[in-house]
Image (cartoon, rainbow, N blue to C red; front, side):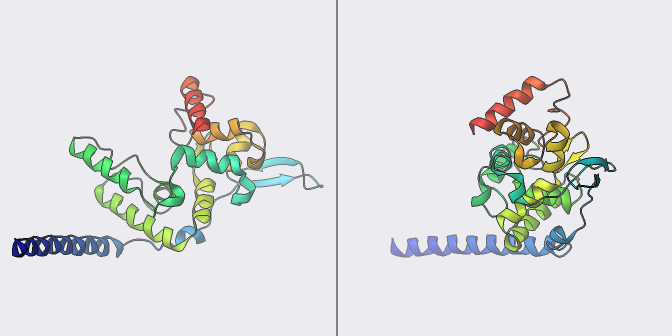
Length: 233
C-alpha cells in the first residue's frame, strides 16, 4: 500500500511539473512579442484644449477631436467615483493579480458549452486597461493570452491606485467623453470630485455599453436599474 501511494504521488508530481513547464512555455512564447508594460504609463494621452477667462476659473471654450478628455489624479475623482466603478466593474480589484481565476474558470466552462464568453466579458479593470491601451480589439485566443500576461506584468509594475487612475482617465463613457472628468462635465456639467453618489453610480454604469446605456438613448429604464444595482453594491 505504501509503494502504491508513493507511485501515485510521483505520478501526480510529474503531471504537475509538466503542466507548470507548459504554462511557462506558453508565457514565454506570447510574452516575446508583447509591448512593454511601461508604455502604458508613459504614453501621451490625447486631451482636450481648454480656454479659460482671465481669472483662470471660468471655462470659456473646450476644443477636442473625437475624444473629449481631461486627465486628473485619483484623488481629484472623489471616493464616490472610485467605489462606484469598483462595484460596477471589478469588486475584487484590490485583491487579485490582474485577472480573476474564478472568472476565467467560469468562462472556460461556458466556452466548452459553446459560449464565446472566454473571449469577451469577465475582464478585470486591469485587463480592460490593457485591452483599451496596448492591444488591438480583435477577439482571438492569442490576444486574450497576451492580455492576461500584460495584465500580470502591469500589476507587478504599478500600484493598484495607479492602475485605477489610468483606467478612469482612459475609458469611454459615450457622447465622445473619455475619462471620468470629461464624463462628469458632459452629463452633469461638474467636476468628478463634485458628483453625488447617484451621479457617480450612473456614470459607472455607462462603460459596459456606452451606446446602449446612454442617458440620451431609449434604454433609460435599464440604465436606472443598473445605477440602482451599483448603489446597492
